[in-house]
Image 1 (cartoon, rainbow, N blue to C red):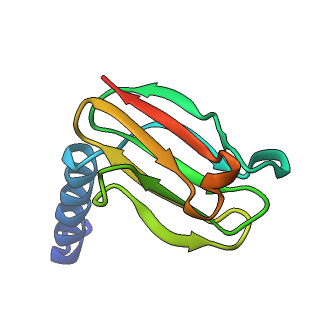
Image 2: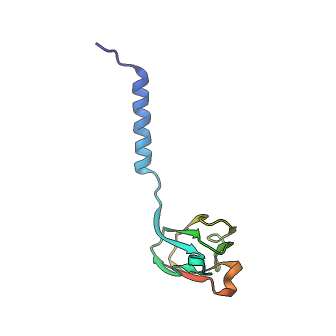
Image 3: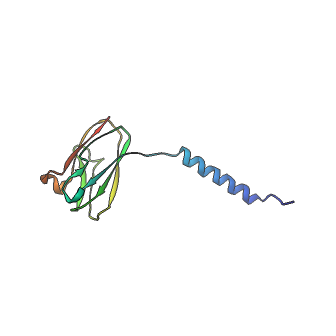
Length: 119
């Protein structure tokens, strides 16, 4: 007959704690992906979206960098660091309802602007 080893009991408890942490841990609701500089144009694509409060938008650098994303009147949501490489991305969570005007500071004069409606 095999003897029960204490180390297996400890490993089982750790596994249980990890699984509970995954199940009950914070979750992020991803609502949309926006490409900055889509198809070689100075645009946000899409440039007009509607999401629910608490959802997260992923901004990904496409072409013609550098790009950033500044939310008018909301520096806490803005990502002012420039993304230089294609594929660079960052997430922004919009916790409160409202309309958020966004722009790329280096290309705002060229019309690189958009709006995010949060319900």
